[in-house]
Amino acid sequence: MASINLSENFMSQISVTIFSAKPYDKTFLEQAATAELCFTCYDLPLNPISASMAQGALIVSAFVNDDLSRETLEVLHQGGTRLIALRCAGYNQVDLLAAKQLGVTIVNVPAYSPYAVAEYTISLMLALSRKLPRAYNRVRDANFSLDGLLGFDFYGKTVGIIGGGKIGCLVAERLKAFGCSILIYEPYNQAACQGKGFELVDIDNLLARSDIISMHCPLTEDTQYLIDENAIQKMKQGVMLINTSRGGLMDTRAVLGALKLHKIAYLGLDVYEQEGSLFFEDHSSEIIQDDVIQRLITLPNVIVTGHQAYFTKEALIHISETTVSNILDFVAGSKLINKVDLS
Ligand code: NAI
Image 1 (cartoon, helix red, strand yellow):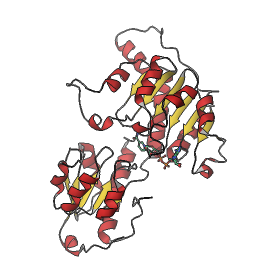
Image 2: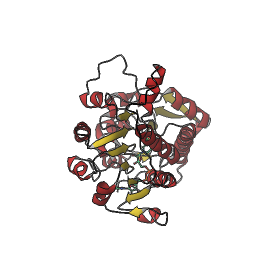
Image 3: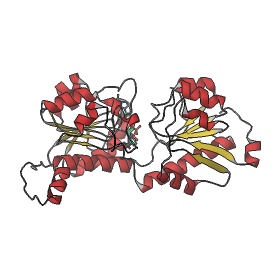
Image 4: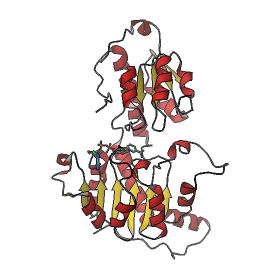
């Protein structure tokens, strides 16, 4: 890595400016911190305007929906920032070319708790199939009728997993234990999916045969709108679609159209392509201007949650500890095991 003289910083405290810092982030980061780190936390997203608040901070920490475009990176660089410690795995929000050109190093937390996301994915599937949100609301109103709550067994169903990485394989293993047949579309790392009783298939085969489809691949240029109108046409009538990965993997308007036609019978989303301006904040007193999400959340066969699949105690401990260790490695000039490179 580029060598930076940090001896002066070691003498004093190392200033780290943290964006999108909710109270729980602050608590866990402070628990993981060492004495030489001085955190300034802002419950504000990072963008080209807020970036000036990090003036003088060698290190900035950002989260999943922060804007790390060239414009933001230039402001940070001008203010003296040389490391951006992402508190998430995904880095699709970072202009890696601009970071490289400016000499700003990016590190991430590659896996904080794949178990958290895998377990949450399955909870979305079960809640949808057994209509738990409707049942819960009904009983609170002393309505014990079962009309409209008919579910289906997972046993014997075929589940298609798109992306057989850490989370995809955990979801697959758990659903196999339910008695499901598992299809996996994994173009790059097939070895990790072999020998586990899963069938590796191409995407069209998966779309055509699956009763439930769950997305577990990263958002890249190749995967943007992987689920579009064309892909939906290839799916079974009445399919369940789950996305706990990234909103941009699906053309949400096309998905909404397919829900109206009953082609998609169940939809579970923990991510949304326009989530940046909505998620992690309370908008309950506002009129939401985004008609697509507003329509989705009214449908009885849709569950939308606000990017909470990762949100367990274990994951927050891991995120904080890895972020602190990434920062300390950078300061010490050690090898950065979680460096995100342009490739
Ligand atoms: P991973 O890197 O272990 O697995 C991703 C897999 O997707 C890799 O095996 C990769 O080869 C595969 N892949 C790449 N391009 C693909 C394509 N075009 N089609 C199919 N597969 C492709 O990542 P991990 O830890 O399993 O995470 C998966 C995704 O989960 C992340 O990219 C992230 O977007 C999302 N995530 C969501 C969270 C949440 O709170 N909702 C929290 C953490 C991750």
